Image (cartoon, rainbow, N blue to C red; front, top):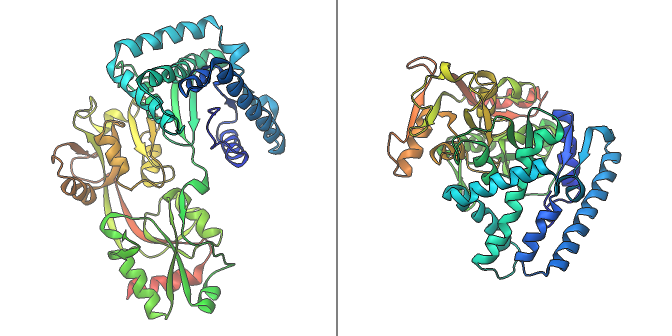
Length: 435
């Protein structure tokens, strides 16, 4: 947790703690308060003011975190709170790593530019004037943080650690890949852990109790959605394309009004439907094994052929998918709980997952590959063709792959998603799709 970052309120910290413990069993809290002094100095605080501010904010975060650990019923032994001042600052192994990272910063222009860009972003959010010299001062924080993470497996006495954060940290994600020194760091990983209320954009605050009877009584069908190329589009709050036309036809035939309550990330569809917030997710959803356990699906509207796509410049692009199945350095762009995630887990269990935010455009997984932030992702073949054509990109910027020459990796149905156990609602929707 960054000392100056106002994001880390109690509910966010509690969510990150609970989910990390639930998924991995143990967690460590790192607040780089001593390195943060350099950032405060770059914001024109005096050294004394900067130190007092960093330490004060760290103590506040530490006390709040300890209280949350108790409230969540987490055993203290399962959470380590790192004290930078007493445990890290003068540690010889850490300092050795810090020297190595500083040399990389000095000698590698790509790493240097990435660190400076990330540091500049922090200063821009501070609303204080700054110059090039201030950016250089602020880089000390990131370099110190990366140096500690490099040393962290030894510090914690484990084989591998994962940096858990609520949004992408590209400088670290690029560092642990091969982009700066051509050495993948298999003992380090990055996990994008977005809380549910970060993965949808609220449009309406209305709430309701249950389904088909309530829908019939209020004559309103509440929908959540996600823009998806020419399957479901939105511009200036005007909707269009195949899935919109179908749901609009269903509501019209039943004398109902459509109410679009929110734009949702695919990772939280079941939560929004099963909680009663929406009646239907009206963009295309593919019924994966995981999703079938969490919600109902309408009849299929059409099928999609899913292939793997790789950047042509990737040093894996000439290798077969079968050859890459056990590769630990392969980077796959995914959104949590989306089809890319399921396919990656099923076919490439050892690959490093590169996390794409839930509310980013569905095409962002492909953009990560094109931008070389990931080596591979999975997507529908005709949508990839549309994406490349719309952006005037070269047709061979990505390479289409499968386990066999022409067959897709998997064929998915495209359906509406419905709340779990709502048989009557599913029957009504299916009847309209059949007709």
